[in-house]
Image 1 (cartoon, one colour):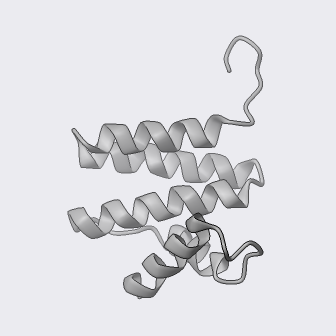
Image 2: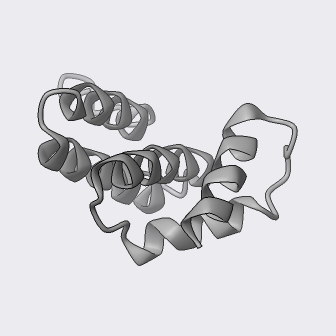
Length: 100
């Protein structure tokens, strides 16, 4: 990404990195997942934002950390998203129901 300056996969790479880091350090993993969420939103990649918010919600539930309000709202938005048959949207919908 740095060499070509193409950033279309940046949010997804950050999400995967955050999930991996969280296995060793939950707090640091949450920070990277938050960065992935923010990157996706800034790029207008709402589906990737749902993925990052879903991972953040799962991690915050298991670790007892607070889920950011904007991530919670992104999960709410996923309820009305097209493609409800996708596993990502179904998972986000289930997590949103358990977060509230």
